Length: 640
Image 1 (cartoon, rainbow, N blue to C red):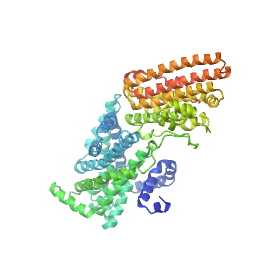
Image 2: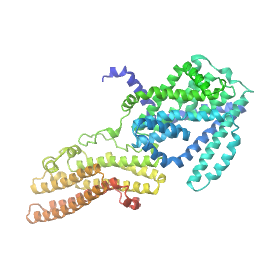
Image 3: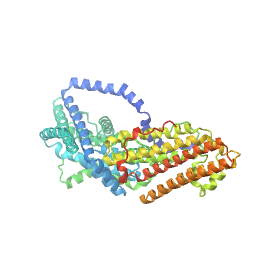
Image 4: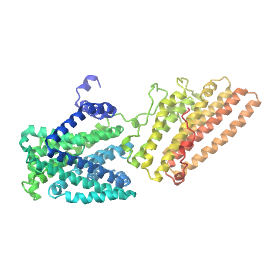
């Protein structure tokens, strides 16, 4: 597409806008510095002035802070109980769009945190545990599920004296929180969270009631389109600052219940809070890969479209709310319940309008952000970039969720193996493309040698292996404390597999110089023997790929043992052949010593590849649960 056509395309404009918003992950330091220099001091000065002139403002802001603290404790508590369960449920209930939608609604309604659900979904999508369609379905449902909190606040929060419930919950929560047993501690967090939520709502409500004697905020109400737009903007800003839709809605309910806010302006604030909650998705996508960023873009698109529809259809939606309110026997002047009803209705509208276009949305999202997992194999025949490759799948977003983190690590180990395959092919003067396409490896090895070899094995190791391997080791250390024992054994098995792959490269590095020299030797016998070494390595690489396709455990074990037996036999035959060549003076002593050493390196490289592949493919078997955990004491392969 030409530059001109691209510049006039609205799709590309939206693409660029979303890409800019989500590329904040690459500009995190700059944004943080800007906030530190301008935004933060301004907010602190305004709050200081407000506290000085108004004690009522102190009560309201204290209520907001306590409420947000309650949300933090509630999320911590739910993570204790829902970690493994929620992950297992997520994998089982996302095989259809409707199941994904239902999952999003129910989990957000129960957990009362669309933020927690969004971060979990981004983590699982980044790790490849669920697909993009399932992730989008969950995000759609989470928006509707989050409205349950508004109903609870409208029904009980504005009508009960919540402080009488908050105090016992805080006392019991603190006692349980101090217990060593994990479940008791998790329950303590939940009780503390609920207690602080109740206490925060109480103080916000008390603060607005006290304001009635000082200033009437309803005098600042705005009617018409201007009022809708201004208060929608207020709702967006409040949610971005507090990073909680629930906190914004509780403030809105408190102000509405005390007459400090008009009903129409409250509706606009609810619309704005829905748009502002997308900041959570953006922040969650900062540490995610392309898949996670696409989901964040879907979240933004859904909320923007839903809010736009709500603004454009606001008069009609108000009529619909009044009609349903009469049917539900809600009083005409019970504006808090009407606001909760409106909050639910316009989210349902957003789902109904956008659900038929979800396939179009998915196709569009897949054009956003390059996905390394969809890119072609690394091809060292054409690779000339000095860039050091790093991990593709190890995102910070998955660290809190063991299944997602372990799946991401598994995919990264597979990525490391793919790069290992390419580098070993380079070391034996082949290419990965030739190896994958060849039906007859003997013919390929005897008739084709890659002549152009512009880089050393060490250079390629630093570019394509070392960074990925370092990230794997660092990431595995970060997640180890969050894993149960069985998964810790699997984690260490993966680390050993990766070490085996890197050790194989080390052995190939030791034969690289001689391989290049003797493949072009005038001595036919030495050329033949080095071609046999190439064939041995190429055959193992090819068979390892086949084992990865056929994941039958007994089949893998059988072929691995068969491969090792063949390697031992080939090593014996090589020694016999070498003795014959020496006795017949067909090779000199220098050639013989080189061939002897290189044959041992090839044998060890093949063994490492087989061992690493078997561990990768069978790491969840019982026999690997007692694997040697003293990983760091083993030989370190960074001296390639």
